[in-house]
Each structure stands twice: as C-alpha cells, then as structure tokens.
Length: 319
Image (cartoon, rainbow, N blue to C red; front, side, top):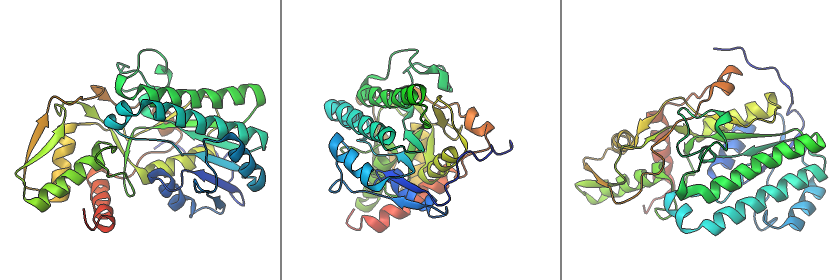
C-alpha cells in the first residue's frame, strides 16, 4: 500500500461545519469526525435554509467555522432525477453557490465540496478518470443534477484561482449504507432493491421486480468508507482537481440483486422490467489518485449490505 500523504490541514481544535448532517453522508461524517479532536457544527433547515443566500451568510458570520464539508444536496434515483429536474438543478446550484461564497466571505480555512460520479460523460472511457470531465454528453436522466455538481466543482476551482481559497472537491461512486433513503419513489438502486426484497420476503412473493435489463455495470461504496475518505482528503489534499472515491470493483445490477437477495434471505426469482431505463451502461471510477495518497475502501459489498439491511430492520419496523 502506498505511503500515506502528509498531513496538510490539522482538524485539532477546529470547528467543522457538516452541511446536510441529517442525510446518509452527513450522519456518516458525524460518526467519523467523532474520532477527531474537533468541534462539529450542524444546522437544521429550520435554522438556515441553504438555498437562501442571506440566511447562509448570516449563519456563517455568526458561527465562523474553520472548515466546511458541503454534503447537503437534493438527491434521488433515476425516477426522481427524471421527474423533478427543476428542483434538482435549482436546489443544488443555490446550495453550493451560497455556501461557497459565504465560506470565502467569512475566511473559512478549508472547504470540501461533495460531487457525484454522474458528472462524467455517459460514454466516458472506463474506468472514469478525473480528466474525463466535460469531454462528452451526460447521461440524460440525471443531467440536471450532474450540471449542478459540475458547477460546484468549477466554483471551488474559481475561488481557489481568484482568491487563493483552499477549496477542494471529491466525487464518490454510488453510495449506500445506514440512513439511506428507502422511499421507492425517490431512492437509488441499493435501498430500493433492499426494501423490495424485504417486502417480497414478508409477503411470500415468488418474484423480485428489478428495473432495467440487469446488465448495467455499477460500482458501490459504503457510506462510512466515504466519510473516512472525505476526512482523509480534508487533511491531506489541496489541489484544484476533483478526486474520485470508489472501490475499484464493479458488478452488474443482476449480480447486485442476487447479493441483496442473499443478504435479505429471500427465496425468489428476479423479474427484470426491460421497459424501465438502465441508465449509463457502465459506471466505474478510476480511483488511482486517492489510492496513491494512501487511502482505500475497507468494507466489502456483502458486509456493507448486511449492515444496511440491519439498519433498515431497526428503523422501518412497519416496512
């Protein structure tokens, strides 16, 4: 394993604002930062609506965080992205513009913007390297979200270039884990399949419906691994280029569904709905850059899915 990159930014004694702390990524960040000697700041939407510039600037002026992890976003799966494009582009543009501008105005020492692997072109060479950004058309179903996230990366680069701000960005691959969104109308593939498999088991159904052909290839990252990577980058990375975060392992949606069936203990056949979209045919990140800095993911998919299902059972008693 490569030698760990040198410590560039110490979190000791610092106030770290985790935006989006109530979401899956935010909660994982709170778990991870509990191991650091720092003070974690959070704010509910009732305390500050990140889509309102004046609210964000007033909160930042009052609380003066030393560092910000920008994990707040309006997110969802293919159905949500495709049916709510205005929300996905407006909310995310507003959130990132307001927080990044306020971070500059209040002299934040370090900011980490959380992007998404969907920023890369639909037909980008696989695995997708950081330099493939803006080299081709986006996947149509989530282009609104992707464009907003690309703008966030460019905001960080622009503030770094013009004002010398230590603002960085990172792009995780498909995430899953405790506190994921299990609403079938807006969830991503892992929580959607976990919930559907759970309900099929509960109801004794002979088949499990799966969107698409099952042939699309995907890479999945356990959310606590992401949180560890983000803290790693906050401490050890300071360059304009966005950093990919993935496992380097991919599998088909069929193989994912089969793994989920085993995790849930379901005895059922898979039923693929080929009338539903597959999304991009393949999505695998080239995570060489962060690997060369000394970080790799630690949680195998089967283990992560088991933990995620355990969380679901505890928090969805009526599910």
